Length: 304
Image 1: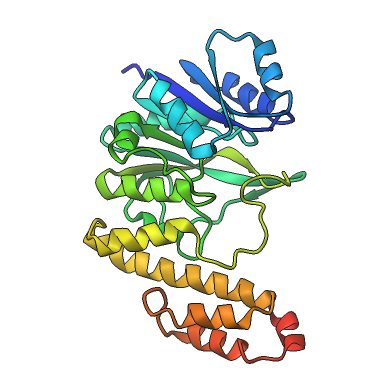
Image 2: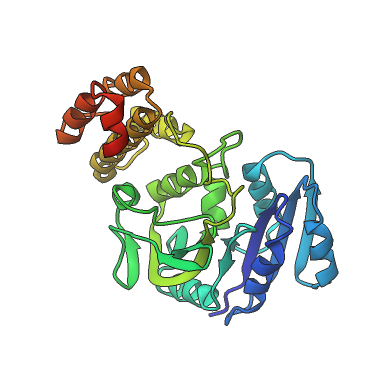
């Protein structure tokens, strides 16, 4: 069986890293058919470097700065193949990534998402992701939300392949979200399709880059995708077997924001989250958090 892969890379001011990302594609054991790079209004010389490669499989699309979701959607629209592999410009694949994806595609032809394990690159250290609820080797992730609770996220925007039909069916990446848009996409595809997963590490996710989207200040408010999940829950869009895990994930997401508010001594904001009954339930973590909102600052600094 022949598989042809398209790759989409959104590019915005990643001149220092884009060639590393592209070279990691060239070094794959299973070659890709096309690489679509969507430059989202970069102001550095990254696009010049891409042009200098003069590769026949690279297609460049230039647009005004509109955000990563529109950049990805633009690239996906232009892909000529059913299997679309995503890669952020500041991450890179190990040489086994496309071979792992091909194996998953052969074994799981009905899956809408194919993903591999990954590791964090922090300066010179490589730290394996701490995952739960995923297959030990090759298999299906039975519940996306369960795999997100108290663990690193099972899928990143550089460790995944999507079927074009699956991403199109949910309307693509949501526009206007500053974070969490990828998690919303994976979850919404999982409502309708299986997620096939390989536990072999095949991607390095670069945490050392200061302006990476996930290197932000402390998150003290619920991310936009949390509210979309609440809406999906309200509209009965979520499969029944996933609901308990989503409820737990919402709970711990809120507690994470509570903790960050307490670190910044925002006690009122922390209490407001703790008494949001649509998000949070009263377990031991809740009672500890309530107690911490009344704890003197000098003690808080020691325990958080």
